[in-house]
Amino acid sequence: RGGLELLHTFIWDNMKNGQVLLALFQALWALSVFDERDKECTNIALDVIHERRVLEGVLFAMQTHDMSMSIQETGFDLLGRLAELMPPDTNELKDAVVLVANNIGEVEPKSKAFVFGLEALISVCQLSDDNKLEFAKAGRDCHASIRRVLKNESASLETRELACRLLWCVTSDRASVSALSSECPLTKDIIAAMQILPHRKSSAPMYECACGTLANLALHPPNHRKMIELGVLTILYEAIYLYEYSEEVQLASCTAIANLSATQHIRSVVCQGGVDALLLSMKSAPNNPDVQCEALRALHILCETSPPAFVSGLDCIIASFFRHSEIKYINQVTCSILAKLSSNEQCRKSMVMLSGTFDCLA
Image (cartoon, rainbow, N blue to C red; front, side, top):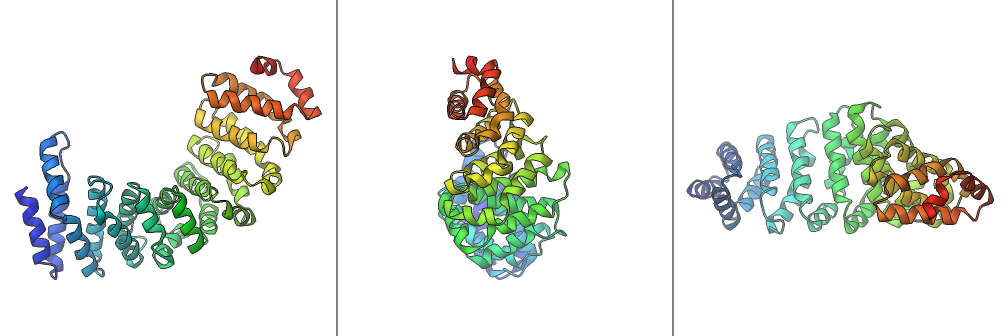
């Protein structure tokens, strides 16, 4: 307790001395790496950090020395660490979002400081929807550097993935999606980022984050028309075919297609290649119930728009029913798809030929 209180006092007493502050930041980081097995010690330290408003001092120091890359780097790293330990409703965390979003724009994208800044934003935004919205409302200038790095081929794959993971996190909140959609052409940036990625196994996590972000953006219906115009469907289909082995990419892509299919007038567009992609995804991850659920959700929306497109995939849909017979949603949506398709003569003939159809409906 005494050490942390002393460090807090020294931060305010040496606010103008960058070298001393850097040393104090490093000491505070070291003290924040608690042995969580010692719960009493950990709780005392967290109480001191919270009661003495240590975060407030750290943020003020970073704002005062916003041109010092050493202080920014250490400060970002420290904020990311403290965010994991502090209560989600800590007021200073909202201030941290705005400060980091502003300051990261002055940091070289290839630097370690930029990576720490992204990690800090992810840690803070994961804590609450309020923090996500704070980032979304930070303004076009605050988002610009993060959006630029997505399309920067000279930036490391790790940095681009973190930038995309941050956007995936933030867009999981509907209000934040609305705020971001009005501020910047995020879909265009995500597509551009995916188009320059090398198609190799190491790119799969980035593809997952990108498709996850697109899935979240597709939860906002006003985005649908623009997303279709930008060619997002082609990108999602490519993701399914290129990363057939990645269940994470399959899940994110199927979710995005399902969310886009919610708009009735674009379902016919989605059906042009979408049904085949969804069926391939189901075949690629037959034992993953999440992939099956999202693919079936999309197929259920689309089945009345283009029934003939389903003929070759009926066996795959029925197989999912039996493989995941314990999952009520899969049971219900499979039966509903078959019921809707039965009104089409071509589908009906194919269904009669499959022995599993009647077992499924029974």
